[in-house]
Length: 143
Image (spheres, rainbow, N blue to C red):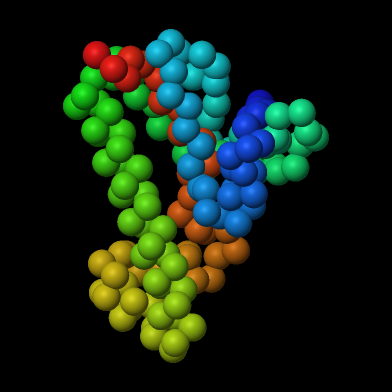
């Protein structure tokens, strides 16, 4: 397994947003396929740091999505995948809330239209928050 480092622009407060889970997706939009393109895999470690500061965050890559030869349709496809992920995060939070209110897994599953197994993992798992901490996207954005 390989380790990776992501250097963040300090003024954007991205490392703080990662720590609070407000930011759960890391994306890189390049015209050319720079590393970590085809170099980063699920299960590998990413260290995050603000520029000019030491590393403050260590996390594992859950999923990597790569898009190349981007045009308007491919960019929209990438955005749709990211939107679906954001919707899943909302369902995750709602599932936790419903469980705390006493609703069982089956009812939560039906209410949120999410599989029973997924609900169970979200509720009983320690790190099953649906999160992607690295998405590599490359190609041409403005054609």
